[in-house]
Image (cartoon, helix red, strand yellow):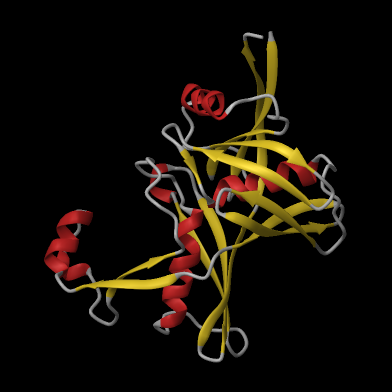
Length: 249
């Protein structure tokens, strides 16, 4: 029999039973993509990560939903970084240092934030988002979102802002890390957020409160020469459990 151990983590929270759930398989080199898919479906979490290679400079990370592998995702990236930093398998320094994850979309830079010998947060650099279609009908959007169209602000447009993440087969997470970067870019672009210094924005996004899984995501956006030049999200993680998947040899 083959055994594969996983860590169960709550991401974007400092308290157990909040945030987004994640299973992290730190040593998945012996698993096929089909097995990773079946394991994720068996665990019935929105996502699980499988690390197939780890060096001092970077790790190869596969992110699966119950339906498919996805090119990039927010809380799986941050939670996986936390687990390896916590266990000392990624070298960390007081104040923070960088590391790379190789995901399906390509290289994703991380910053591991360490204070008083403890990993307090992981920051994930996201692709620069694109501003796409603008929707004109408040009535249609209100109907799709099950809200009153009069509650939709007319100050700014209803617009698709995307970091290139496709639909992933998840009905809804308590919080959505991959969408938080584009949200921050939208808020900064339309002057709905205030900047600490010229061109730099730090926004705290709180999600999941109504379903009793509170999340806090810090969004960082930088403008250079009137263009968005940097987007990242950051959050804390906590341990909640661990387990073992047993497969035939």
